[in-house]
Amino acid sequence: MNILEIIDKKRLNKSLNENEIQFVIENYVNGNIKDYQMSSLLMAIVINGMNFDETYYFTKYMINSGKIIDLSSINGIKVDKHSTGGVGDKITLIIAPIVSLYAKFVKMSGRGLGFTGGTIDKLESIKGFNVNYDIDEIINQVNKYNICISYTSDELVIADKKIYALRDASGTVASIPLIASSIMSKKIASGADDIVIDLKVGAGAFMKNKEDALTLAHTMINIGKKFNKKVVCILSNMNDVLGISVGNKLEVLESIEVLKNGGEEDIRNLAIEISSRMISIANNIDIEKAKEKVVKSLEDGSAYNKFLEFVKIQGGDISSLVIDAKTIYIKAYESGYIKYIDVEGIGEFSRSLGAGRINKDDIIDNNVGIKIFKKCGDYIEKDDIIAQVFYNKDMPNIVDKVNSFFTLTNNKVDKNEIILDIVE
Image (cartoon, rainbow, N blue to C red; front, side):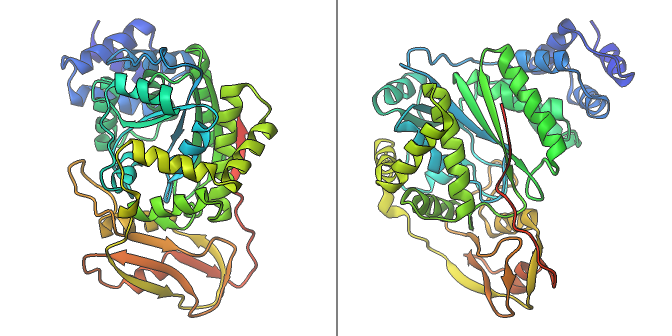
């Protein structure tokens, strides 16, 4: 078998068979296929796509490229959640304690290369919080407490780590089959029985429109079926910042407000929907009954108490969540209805403050970030406070920059719905 023949075959928009895909994955991991050759194949895939069988085989051999975690010694159904990434996305911090009141929640996550840190970075902004667990420790903790969030093993899905980095560097990220196989290979290798995926759609997400998001959702659901995993995709709106906070400590503190039965309506509603789906799947109960449990846990304080227990058992000091940064409130330059918010621009701005990474070795400042107090559709008056910036290094033209994220109109604008669709 020859990599050049395989590249040429995909260039001509012909389907690759299982043996060819196995050959590509295995030989790229062991170094026999070079980056420039793999880049050529990835570009051909971006241009011509892959059918479902190709996508399934691609997923299968990425899973087989590394260690596969066996969680069968955890009693009961194990549920996991994945987000395709967005600005202000701290949902895992909220749903984990809620779900673990009624089901086994186990999640392996990485550090973020994005606008803020990933789930692991957010948790590590709590002083002392430990995310470095081996598999036996994870199993023991989940059996005892129903919850564990741990750093992803470097031995998991080795092919995806290499291919993901190459896609990022070669302009071959925009492919639904490649996105689906990347997400699902990691989720399946991590050992959960069932998976709920928060698939972000809009200006601050990779999937800009609902049609492409639906295609991705159905692809991931069908991959799950091939591996006997139930997958539910919740399409959620990312044309607004989720909640109000972007930045690691800021997002943890906002998550706590939701767990205390407060918080913004959008993030509360999404957290309730995702938690309810996970509890419904794990316990085989009606979704409305699951929602009753979730709402009750927020109202009676049990969700917040579970979060405190979770932080304590993983070594965190909740009293360390104090913001150490300079701050400035941003006032609006003019009046009008908010027609559009540059959510991606807000994310990039937050990263420029130090809240996120460009390179994996970058040091995050957990104290910095931004709060956005307005949503699309809101009416604002000139000099209304629209945002608050937390910073530790001098940033020129902060007020001008933040005001540039908001596009106003004189005409009334409908507010965004947070949940666009649920696909099962």
